[in-house]
Length: 220
Ligand SMILES: [Zn+2]
Image (cartoon, rainbow, N blue to C red; front, top):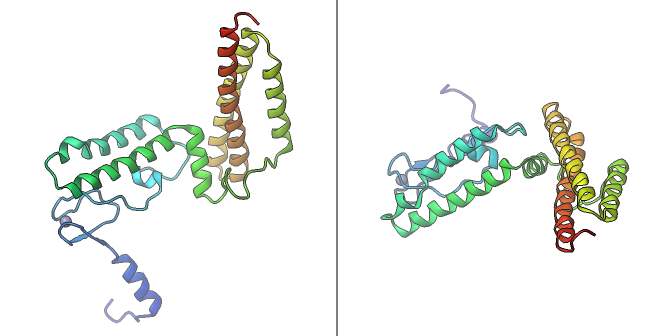
Protein backbone atom coordinates (compact mmCIF):
# COMPACT_ATOMS: atom_id res chain seq x y z
CA UNK A 1 0.00 0.00 0.00
CA UNK A 2 2.95 2.32 0.56
CA UNK A 3 3.90 2.44 -3.11
CA UNK A 4 0.39 3.27 -4.29
CA UNK A 5 0.74 6.05 -6.87
CA UNK A 6 -0.60 9.31 -5.53
CA UNK A 7 -2.81 11.24 -7.91
CA UNK A 8 -4.61 14.52 -7.27
CA UNK A 9 -7.92 12.58 -7.32
CA UNK A 10 -6.65 10.06 -4.78
CA UNK A 11 -5.38 12.91 -2.62
CA UNK A 12 -8.77 14.63 -2.80
CA UNK A 13 -10.56 11.39 -1.90
CA UNK A 14 -8.21 10.79 1.00
CA UNK A 15 -8.70 14.34 2.21
CA UNK A 16 -12.46 13.92 2.04
CA UNK A 17 -12.37 10.62 3.90
CA UNK A 18 -10.25 12.25 6.56
CA UNK A 19 -12.60 15.22 6.74
CA UNK A 20 -13.77 14.37 10.19
CA UNK A 21 -15.23 17.38 11.86
CA UNK A 22 -13.35 18.83 14.80
CA UNK A 23 -15.20 18.66 18.10
CA UNK A 24 -16.22 22.20 19.09
CA UNK A 25 -15.30 21.44 22.68
CA UNK A 26 -12.04 19.45 22.67
CA UNK A 27 -11.02 19.92 18.99
CA UNK A 28 -10.69 16.16 18.66
CA UNK A 29 -11.88 14.42 15.48
CA UNK A 30 -15.56 13.41 15.35
CA UNK A 31 -17.57 11.46 12.84
CA UNK A 32 -20.04 14.08 11.50
CA UNK A 33 -22.91 11.60 11.96
CA UNK A 34 -22.18 11.11 15.67
CA UNK A 35 -24.29 12.80 18.29
CA UNK A 36 -21.45 12.91 20.81
CA UNK A 37 -17.67 13.35 20.70
CA UNK A 38 -16.01 10.00 21.45
CA UNK A 39 -13.23 11.80 23.34
CA UNK A 40 -14.92 14.42 25.54
CA UNK A 41 -18.59 13.27 25.17
CA UNK A 42 -19.72 16.77 24.14
CA UNK A 43 -22.92 16.85 22.06
CA UNK A 44 -22.18 17.69 18.40
CA UNK A 45 -24.20 19.95 16.07
CA UNK A 46 -26.59 18.31 13.55
CA UNK A 47 -24.79 17.08 10.43
CA UNK A 48 -26.32 17.79 7.00
CA UNK A 49 -27.96 14.36 6.69
CA UNK A 50 -31.19 13.35 5.01
CA UNK A 51 -34.04 12.45 7.39
CA UNK A 52 -33.67 8.70 6.80
CA UNK A 53 -29.93 8.66 7.47
CA UNK A 54 -30.33 10.86 10.54
CA UNK A 55 -32.66 8.32 12.12
CA UNK A 56 -30.59 5.33 10.97
CA UNK A 57 -33.11 4.10 8.39
CA UNK A 58 -32.52 3.09 4.78
CA UNK A 59 -33.70 5.63 2.17
CA UNK A 60 -36.93 3.83 1.32
CA UNK A 61 -40.67 4.48 1.47
CA UNK A 62 -41.28 1.29 3.41
CA UNK A 63 -40.91 2.59 6.97
CA UNK A 64 -42.25 0.57 9.89
CA UNK A 65 -43.70 3.16 12.22
CA UNK A 66 -42.86 1.20 15.44
CA UNK A 67 -39.22 0.96 14.29
CA UNK A 68 -39.20 4.67 13.40
CA UNK A 69 -40.61 5.52 16.83
CA UNK A 70 -38.12 3.33 18.65
CA UNK A 71 -35.20 5.02 16.86
CA UNK A 72 -36.63 8.52 17.31
CA UNK A 73 -37.42 8.15 21.00
CA UNK A 74 -33.96 6.62 21.53
CA UNK A 75 -32.34 9.78 20.15
CA UNK A 76 -34.75 12.05 22.01
CA UNK A 77 -33.82 10.33 25.29
CA UNK A 78 -30.15 11.06 24.63
CA UNK A 79 -31.05 14.69 23.90
CA UNK A 80 -33.50 15.18 26.78
CA UNK A 81 -33.15 18.70 28.26
CA UNK A 82 -32.67 17.23 31.77
CA UNK A 83 -29.39 15.70 30.61
CA UNK A 84 -28.13 19.15 29.66
CA UNK A 85 -29.46 21.05 32.67
CA UNK A 86 -25.94 21.57 34.06
CA UNK A 87 -24.19 21.77 30.69
CA UNK A 88 -22.54 24.82 29.14
CA UNK A 89 -24.97 27.12 27.28
CA UNK A 90 -23.37 26.13 23.97
CA UNK A 91 -23.93 22.40 24.65
CA UNK A 92 -27.55 23.12 25.66
CA UNK A 93 -28.12 25.09 22.48
CA UNK A 94 -26.55 22.37 20.31
CA UNK A 95 -28.63 19.66 22.00
CA UNK A 96 -31.75 21.71 21.19
CA UNK A 97 -30.81 22.05 17.52
CA UNK A 98 -30.22 18.29 17.39
CA UNK A 99 -33.65 17.72 18.96
CA UNK A 100 -35.22 20.01 16.33
CA UNK A 101 -33.46 18.10 13.51
CA UNK A 102 -34.70 14.76 14.87
CA UNK A 103 -38.24 16.14 15.31
CA UNK A 104 -38.31 17.31 11.72
CA UNK A 105 -37.03 13.94 10.49
CA UNK A 106 -39.59 12.05 12.59
CA UNK A 107 -42.56 14.25 11.64
CA UNK A 108 -41.66 13.93 7.95
CA UNK A 109 -41.12 10.17 7.93
CA UNK A 110 -44.05 9.08 10.09
CA UNK A 111 -46.67 10.53 7.70
CA UNK A 112 -46.98 8.61 4.39
CA UNK A 113 -47.75 11.72 2.31
CA UNK A 114 -44.91 13.77 3.82
CA UNK A 115 -42.55 10.77 3.55
CA UNK A 116 -43.39 10.13 -0.13
CA UNK A 117 -43.12 13.86 -0.94
CA UNK A 118 -39.74 14.06 0.78
CA UNK A 119 -38.40 10.85 -0.79
CA UNK A 120 -39.40 12.11 -4.26
CA UNK A 121 -37.71 15.45 -3.54
CA UNK A 122 -34.39 13.89 -2.51
CA UNK A 123 -34.67 11.49 -5.48
CA UNK A 124 -34.82 14.48 -7.86
CA UNK A 125 -38.52 14.28 -8.84
CA UNK A 126 -40.23 16.83 -6.57
CA UNK A 127 -44.02 17.16 -6.62
CA UNK A 128 -43.84 20.77 -5.44
CA UNK A 129 -41.81 23.82 -6.32
CA UNK A 130 -40.33 25.01 -9.57
CA UNK A 131 -41.30 22.94 -12.60
CA UNK A 132 -43.42 20.60 -10.51
CA UNK A 133 -46.63 22.58 -10.01
CA UNK A 134 -48.60 21.17 -12.94
CA UNK A 135 -50.61 18.00 -12.88
CA UNK A 136 -49.19 16.21 -15.91
CA UNK A 137 -51.65 13.39 -15.70
CA UNK A 138 -54.95 14.45 -17.28
CA UNK A 139 -56.81 11.46 -15.79
CA UNK A 140 -55.74 12.46 -12.31
CA UNK A 141 -56.85 16.05 -12.87
CA UNK A 142 -60.32 14.99 -14.11
CA UNK A 143 -60.70 12.59 -11.21
CA UNK A 144 -59.92 15.29 -8.65
CA UNK A 145 -62.22 17.86 -10.26
CA UNK A 146 -65.10 15.38 -10.25
CA UNK A 147 -64.57 14.63 -6.58
CA UNK A 148 -64.50 18.30 -5.64
CA UNK A 149 -67.67 18.99 -7.61
CA UNK A 150 -69.41 16.09 -5.89
CA UNK A 151 -68.36 17.48 -2.52
CA UNK A 152 -69.64 20.97 -3.30
CA UNK A 153 -72.92 19.49 -4.51
CA UNK A 154 -73.38 17.33 -1.40
CA UNK A 155 -76.06 19.05 0.66
CA UNK A 156 -76.50 16.70 3.61
CA UNK A 157 -74.19 15.13 6.18
CA UNK A 158 -74.59 11.47 5.02
CA UNK A 159 -73.64 12.46 1.45
CA UNK A 160 -70.53 14.32 2.70
CA UNK A 161 -69.62 11.40 4.97
CA UNK A 162 -69.95 8.95 2.09
CA UNK A 163 -67.59 11.08 -0.03
CA UNK A 164 -65.14 11.36 2.88
CA UNK A 165 -65.21 7.58 3.40
CA UNK A 166 -64.55 7.00 -0.32
CA UNK A 167 -61.64 9.47 -0.18
CA UNK A 168 -60.19 7.63 2.85
CA UNK A 169 -60.43 4.25 1.11
CA UNK A 170 -58.81 5.67 -2.03
CA UNK A 171 -56.07 7.34 0.04
CA UNK A 172 -55.29 3.93 1.52
CA UNK A 173 -55.10 2.43 -1.98
CA UNK A 174 -52.90 5.32 -3.19
CA UNK A 175 -50.53 4.75 -0.23
CA UNK A 176 -50.23 1.06 -1.19
CA UNK A 177 -49.61 2.07 -4.83
CA UNK A 178 -46.88 4.52 -3.70
CA UNK A 179 -45.18 1.75 -1.71
CA UNK A 180 -45.33 -0.62 -4.69
CA UNK A 181 -44.01 2.03 -7.11
CA UNK A 182 -41.06 2.92 -4.85
CA UNK A 183 -40.35 -0.77 -4.27
CA UNK A 184 -39.96 -1.37 -8.02
CA UNK A 185 -38.03 1.90 -8.52
CA UNK A 186 -40.76 3.52 -10.62
CA UNK A 187 -40.44 7.14 -9.52
CA UNK A 188 -42.83 8.46 -12.21
CA UNK A 189 -45.62 6.22 -10.88
CA UNK A 190 -44.69 7.07 -7.29
CA UNK A 191 -44.99 10.76 -8.17
CA UNK A 192 -48.47 10.40 -9.72
CA UNK A 193 -49.74 8.33 -6.78
CA UNK A 194 -48.24 10.84 -4.32
CA UNK A 195 -50.06 13.67 -6.12
CA UNK A 196 -53.25 11.58 -5.93
CA UNK A 197 -52.74 11.02 -2.19
CA UNK A 198 -52.09 14.73 -1.70
CA UNK A 199 -55.41 15.65 -3.35
CA UNK A 200 -57.26 12.94 -1.44
CA UNK A 201 -55.88 14.19 1.90
CA UNK A 202 -56.91 17.75 0.94
CA UNK A 203 -60.35 16.53 -0.11
CA UNK A 204 -60.73 14.78 3.26
CA UNK A 205 -59.95 18.08 5.01
CA UNK A 206 -62.49 19.90 2.85
CA UNK A 207 -65.09 17.23 3.58
CA UNK A 208 -64.54 17.68 7.33
CA UNK A 209 -64.97 21.43 6.94
CA UNK A 210 -68.15 20.98 4.92
CA UNK A 211 -69.52 18.46 7.41
CA UNK A 212 -68.90 20.93 10.27
CA UNK A 213 -70.68 23.72 8.38
CA UNK A 214 -73.66 21.46 7.61
CA UNK A 215 -73.80 20.36 11.26
CA UNK A 216 -73.85 23.99 12.40
CA UNK A 217 -76.64 24.88 10.02
CA UNK A 218 -78.76 21.85 11.00
CA UNK A 219 -79.99 19.57 8.25
CA UNK A 220 -79.27 21.42 5.04
ZN1 LIG B 1 -14.73 16.48 22.11
